[in-house]
Length: 225
Image 1 (cartoon, rainbow, N blue to C red):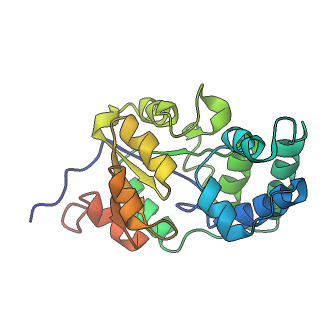
Image 2 (spheres, helix red, strand yellow):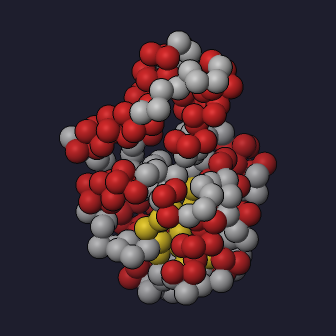
Image 3 (spheres, rainbow, N blue to C red):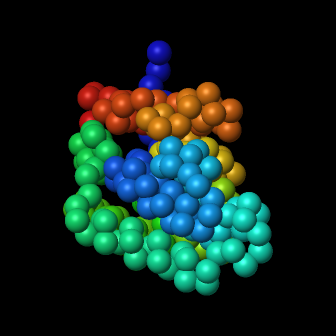
């Protein structure tokens, strides 16, 4: 079978794709939402909010608890807690740094697009040692008009790489992010470590299960390198 064509650029999500930070996000979100009166654990927080930006989460809480139930500084407080947690240390998703190194060595431009805030994303990339890899090509929800699942972030990421989105590959782990990549016109590879692969497939992503497989899925065979 012929390998897939090499992409013009590879556009990465961050949480759950580059950074192993989903557990931290889910725990903090569950604790903070519970404090407002909607009791939930980390598993439910993941199920309800995975891949959403902070600004999209707030209306969902208010729909459950009523208008005005979310304090004005609620999201800022969550971001402060996340930043404190991130400063204690960040682990990469197993296998992603070697896969990323192969992509860069092959001369393929890379970018990152995350529904995190700008300070969170910068902290994560520094903690992973990837700030230089993505310098000038890192997009948060602060950098676009609309966060995922809108296509804005991936279109911006493709543009900064000088690539047509239709020739780019997005690497995502959430349904929300996969929808954004598909809406931008990209091929989407869905890393199915925390999301049901059938759910990823249903929104047009191609599920895969190990980051070590990523270069091959991009057409980067040993012979091609």
